[in-house]
Length: 444
Ligand SMILES: Cc1cc2nc3c(=O)[nH]c(=O)nc-3n(C[C@H](O)[C@H](O)[C@H](O)COP(=O)(O)OP(=O)(O)OC[C@H]3O[C@@H](n4cnc5c(N)ncnc54)[C@H](O)[C@@H]3O)c2cc1C
Image (cartoon, rainbow, N blue to C red; front, top):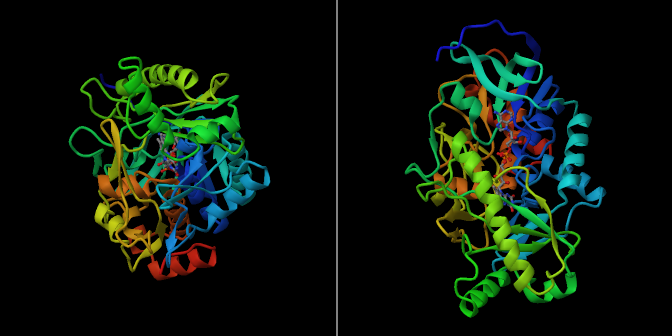
């Protein structure tokens, strides 16, 4: 049907508008505002954190990796400021190791993350527009003249000199006509997961029984052998881990397929809706198993089902450079590095997870190039986070929070410096100097 043209009120005019309040959008907006740009962050929910809160992820990955054979925190910059605030409010867990010491993560309290992110952005001078869904762009040649948002006050336009798409789904880039791929390019992709948290656990008993990273999978295998047909598990490689208060555990165990048995498509409205139902159905079934079979969980209860199905991968733009799986495995270096990714390839395939670790186990990180933020055909747009320019395999690694903070900080810093020209003409050496001055580590 044809929609009649209409005139939109202009909500405001800014130097930088960031769409999406996940790790990439948080780092982008804070960095832009700290560089003196009048910055607005547009977020469809009423809180920040993206998949980290709305998707119930509850865990920072990709911040730590091995340098000179030593496991250490390698992602720095805005990420440090956010972690420090979460820690100061008692919401940050000590580092947890897994996969025979090849990965290190920090879990956190989701509510504290929301509080800390609010404070971080407000203190940096970022203006926030919650409950606003980016719905379209208005273009002027190769530039985006305005972002169109749907709000409770109706449809409105927001003008800016530069835009950052940190929507995770490359919504803004897609509206602006930037070429992209979805998932693995063959109708599937990284499978989504609805996360949930289990409380009232007998911590000592549970840690003794399933405290090791992969121990829950041994329990699942044993129970399946002893009671064939009693439980159907959506995938191998379940993750059930204690949070900062070990009476509470996070469960990353579901896997959402579409009617064709492929990964649910997170940018298909009907599949998204069906996926929410399926995720909660799987949670009920898995929790029946946990309560009956896993030591320490007999008196436990589900304390939260994540507000939305967790989406790992949807659109990825086809930008000036696409980070590849080989870049991850070879610990790649780039002259236009904006920081590093320290997470291995983590492919959530059909019924299982496949890991791909860097060959050099003394240097388990790769640099991220500036070019992966750059769409080819829009002058004043950068794309940061899990929808930046990467192949399916490259994205399976750099989509973790650590890499998204890095991309966001670089995007915000660069966008704040844009004049009348194009972002493609950014002085990369000057950008790198600024990032280092602001605490980022670009790798060596
Ligand atoms: C189940 C699951 C488990 C994971 N486990 C981990 C883990 O243990 N550790 C880890 O570090 N990472 C993990 N990840 C990956 C990580 O959480 C995400 O890849 C990361 O959050 C991506 O950051 P982002 O900022 O690019 O996008 P997102 O976190 O997806 O944030 C995008 C934001 O944009 C908003 N938005 C989207 N569209 C619009 C629109 N049109 N208008 C306005 N706002 C919009 C969203 O509401 C959201 O707040 C996991 C992901 C999933 C799904």
